[in-house]
Image (spheres, rainbow over the protein chains, first blue to last red):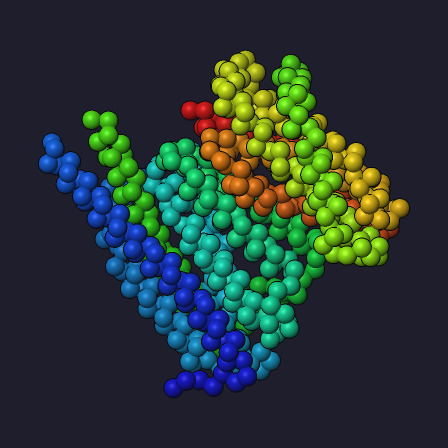
Length: 52
Length: 243
Length: 218
């Protein structure tokens, strides 16, 4: 299944590895922050409902 | 047809984007992975560049996104300055880190490609240098957002910085061209010159570009909604402290 | 406006730091370079124009945060904003004061430091010319950066991060004039570009600075 990358295998694979790491890094960061902020906001809203 | 400006209402924006978000995400996943898998496993090697040609399925889309995301930030900054819609400013804020990552990806893949092809990781070539400068602009923009507490002040200052920065980024582009003639080939994937690249490379590259664009849209939706929530939370907390 | 200019100049003189500091910094950076790269005259004279330009740029950067920060802290910036003088004018005058206290001394000191760097004889005219035309742009761009970060505590590092990318075109053309001059080539084109950048930033950036100041004073 693995294509024959010839003598440039290291370059091609490292380019893909670095790029995918960076891109998945920003995706993961975005999702994690989205989840955290959502939870915190829900908490603040709930507190506000109770007080009102 | 409702006015486009309806989406300036944060609630309306969030509701609509959250409805279309699953579609965008799935399309992004399909195009992104599909394009890369197609490019990586099922395309031939270039007769001169060997398998390094496969790096371009990442390099070209990320480089395009790096520039286009800055343009998108410029447009949203202008909308904020003229019409003062919070969603617009927050979208610019949400896009900046993605743009910085894209610039970094373009720089890294370019360096890794340049090593075997040009025999050097880095050359002070106009295109490479401009991208480095663009990266610095992204860094400064994000640092300014992070440094200011008040939301509206931060939005105002960063949008002015984005406007002024755009002018200087363009100026740098020409200055750098003047300063050093480069190694880098001209853009090989413009729409009017598609015959520059053989179809076997062109179609998977198109899918990859679509994948990167959709991925960016999905990320901006998540990140903008996060910023809207964070802003509301700060407002609520401030009100609590006052009470 | 003239009153504001003389006030700023007098403050810069009296505070001691502002006036001489940039100049001494310029001197020290230039002196450091031969220690870094070795004392060979041929190498030094080759890199002299670039070193002088980068050093001048850093010396300019050093004194930027003084442009607005002190006035912002003691409230006189608020007074200036409510005075009949338009804020754009204030920003322009402040940049001019910065140039007179930092940029102009650098221009005058450059030939002396050129001697230290064994700059070729043909390079002295161009380096002075290029700094003369380029440093006003550095001051005006710097004033914009200073206006952006005026409300931020300990904004010095952020200021450098914001301003340095904006300095890039000025540096490129300025250093190009100096380098071509030192090599005896024709340097008219980059000099005109440099003058164009200075003129355009002088005309336009005070408006951006004033906008940003208004936001920060809100």
